[in-house]
Image (cartoon, rainbow, N blue to C red; front, side):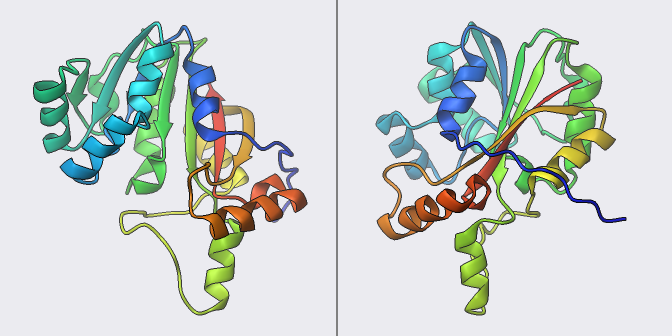
Length: 219
């Protein structure tokens, strides 16, 4: 059965949204390495854009999990990030999640073959007052829709799915979570001028036509 669902009418800065959710909190950052290659990652860290590093500056305490063994080794041995350990988002059952106030999954869920395993583990293990913050690519991003009209699809090679506000909320529901906040976001400052200009114009029509969506879940 098809039903019409109201959409949030709010546009946020993705990074600032995450940092606000982490400020003063005990945080677990899942998929924390954002690892493409050693050179790319090092450049990101030097520029101060690495999200895990920015969370560390505002959180009360911080732990990280990432499935990339080379990235975790690099972070632990070269950069002293001993709070980061090797692990899979789809196999969190062995981790104690009860001690965290905020769990962050930034630009992660669209990479997972079985995202329900991740969300179900979080729902089962998180504390009653804890929240899960998810950011992900938007299925209705106007830039990608325009590209489709030309006969091409522009997508990250590792992505397995697109999400909308409703499909992300529904996935959370069937895994034992409920949405307590939602918003849209556009490409950040410093992005190529034309794509960002397209999204800024589209956001005047709806904040849900931009690069991505954010959702905060609780049990």
